[in-house]
Length: 330
Image 1 (cartoon, helix red, strand yellow):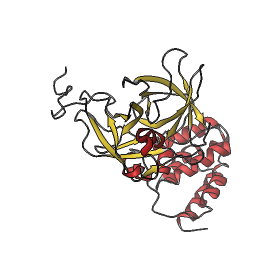
Image 2 (cartoon, rainbow, N blue to C red; image 1 turned 60 degrees about the vertical axis):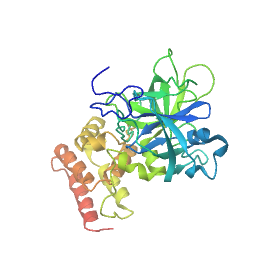
Image 3 (cartoon, one colour; image 1 turned 90 degrees about the vertical axis):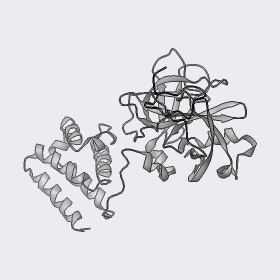
């Protein structure tokens, strides 16, 4: 055993390092694991609302926010469990085909060899490899599954479809709900698993991306490392449309390769999270909407475009529109 880590029965030992993916949480019901979760801080856990309902069983319903739920920590060497309860503002049960999110507050600290997840917005979804750890076994022996993000949609427009990376091995199934979906490129959690297609054959499942989690439970924002608060200035309702109309006239925006370069040059926080379809108007609308979420987003976009435009008339027109908006123009 590595020095500084705890073993079973040693939950009070101070540790110097954490196990990889030690943010993983196991949600327990009367007969064993019913789902998974993500440790957001030293006191909070993100999971699915239907996982909490399963854990509570006959106690689920109107009193769910006060009822204790037992959770374990498969990412820890300490075999301890902790009770937790839904926090005020942390309950968003499925309404139609939306939501299904819950935030729990731990009644006591998790094991010291755990650490909160790095939570980031999902951003573009097409063909991104991810992995997730689910609790499908009654004995609490979870497994990792590798999948690939395929795009938004499915039973809910808020969900993102995941397809198995290989026809071999474990697939997402009952017990994976609430599991953190990990971006294999940087180890960050980009969403939580919510459901899987039933039956045999190639495995298709869905996750709730972090962007949607934030809409349902805004209190999660403190745990999202790339969360962007709204701009200090309240833009007029016409701002987005006026900027889109001016931006699509730029020759460098009309060219797909240059458009991609401009998006990259506007900053990683924008480039990594804005959806790109290859369709000019759709891409520009998504880009402008994202840039307006930052105080300096449009300024960065304009600076990147000017390098290609070299004083073109369409660029001057765009700058005029932007200046008018900054001065309160309608």
